[in-house]
Image 1 (cartoon, rainbow, N blue to C red):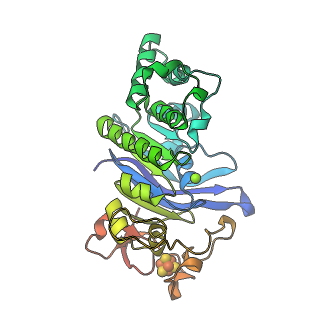
Image 2: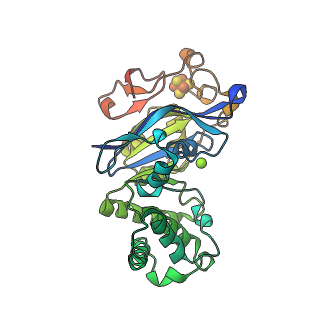
Image 3: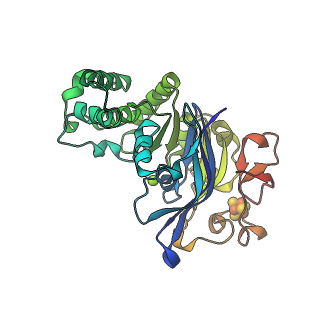
Length: 334
Ligand code: SF4
Ligand code: MG
C-alpha cells in the first residue's frame, strides 16, 4: 500500500528549558492510502498532541522539537509538512489534511447559518469558485453526511448534536482532502449515534478514497472501524498491528489491559479488569519502560531500559510492531 503520511521520529514538548516535558516521543507511524488508522490510549498518552503536532496546530507552549511529517500529495513530490511556510500550511490544512476536533460540534459559529459556514471554507480556499458552485457543493456535502439540504439555512442551535457533528465532518470533507484526522469525533454523542456516524464515515471513505486517523480512548470503536491500530502510552507508540490482530492477540501488556477494559464484541465476555494505577505524569515519566510501575509482567530489564519499538519474532511479525522486553524484536521500526 502506498503511504500518504509518514511520521518520522516526531517529538513534541510542552514548555522550554528545564521545565519542558516531552509529550510525544520518537513517534514513527505511516498512514497508507485509503486506510483507517486508529490511535488509542488513555487521556494524556499523547494522542491529541500527536495529531495537533503533525498538522502544526499545537497551541503554545507546545513545540515540535524534532522529526519529519512527510506528505505525499496526489500529484507532485512528497514534502515535509514541518517545513511549510505559514501560507502553504494554511492551504495544506483543509485541502490536503482536515481535522475534526474533540467537541467540534460546539465549534460551529452560533450566529451564522450552516450554509455560510460551509461556503466560507470554499471561499477561503477556492476564491475563483462561483457562488452558485459553492452553494451546490455545500448542499452536496450535507447530503453526503445524511442531512437534508433543506437544512442549509438552519442555525447551529436548530440542529441536534449528532447533526452538528455531521456538519463538521461535511466541512472537513468539502475540499476533498486526502487525510481526515478525527480526534474523539463522537465522544459527546450517545453510543448509537457514535456508531451511526462512524459507519457513515467509513462508507464515505470507500466512495471518496480518503484516509483517516481516528483517535479515541475507546478501543472497542477502533476495533470495529479501523484497519490498523497504534497504541500510545507516555507519549510513545507501544504497539501497532492490524485491528484484528490487536483484538485477538495483543502482545503489549498495556494493550491487553486496554482490551480488557471493554466488553468483548463477540464470543465469551471478557472480565472488565481495566488497568490498575493511573497514566504517568509527563513531568515525572518513569525510567525504562514507562509502563513498568503498572505492569503485571514487569521484570529486570523494564525499569532501567527503554524497550524500542520493533518487529516481534512471530510468524506475523512483518505486519506488526511492539515495544516490550517480553517480546524480542528484530530491527527497530522507523
Ligand atoms: Fe511490562 Fe516490561 Fe513489557 Fe514494559 S517492557 S510492558 S514493564 S513487561
Ligand atoms: Mg485528547
